[in-house]
Length: 349
Image (cartoon, rainbow, N blue to C red; front, side, top):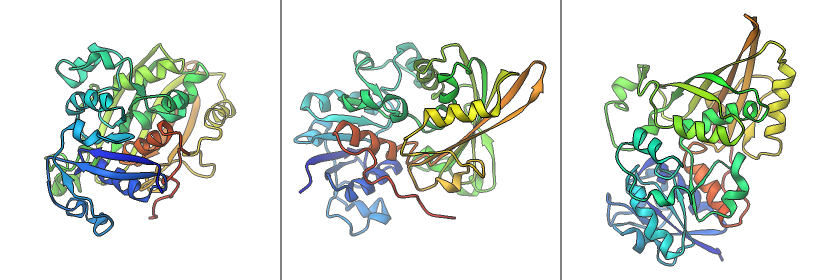
């Protein structure tokens, strides 16, 4: 018999589809409720065709308090600003919360207001939320009542830079270009995800002002890199899943390839979802459909007394960049093996 009970709010979106799929497979957690303002009364398969016939659950129109009643954990696939108001009544019910939105990721209220727009309805909870990147924050996540799962770009970029932060090699300007698939824009159709345009196109959006920038900087500072200026340009790509980030860092001329390799190997030793390919560089097809991240780098020649280090990172934006990491965090807060339902490698090609 499964020991824990879970509910999902915002159940009709792409992130929720992945959370639901993994919860239906989970040996220790039973999915009891799926709440949504769309598809109310309809089977889950009506919104998520790959779940057809796998469960008798239907979408319910529930308040956060109603959804949380009797639950051990509630996972939120709600939009930014909607999650902010949903969290307090769930916490009052005694359930733990894993939130996939950006509403509780930032500690700095001013940064939230600048990058997400408007006042935060519950700023008093920002300090209580634990940032949900297991590779840097595992023990705090285990004790948390509210976990703010990182953004997809934030996860990708941080993982490629954290080894440098921990070695004191990350300071000054960092230039990043991140290429992402269309599913990151959500299930609601819009111009940025319309197939006839997206399938044959590359375009940037929110250049140098993406909302994941302050989250990345806060997290890198906690890893020892407080003097960093991040210049980030996101790019929409003609693929449905995946993120590939290239981060350019200037390091001292004395830094060697072996030192960088050692930093990556030591930082991520024993991490179940981090891969450091030895015979190739990271690529999206290797991680698509999985909770794994691939990391790599290339070190350039000495120029003007320094060297350019290019760090490469690839993840599936919906899984390690969203729902899969949410399940990983759920496993941790419930005291379970964090890899449960997440070790599958995805498909190829």
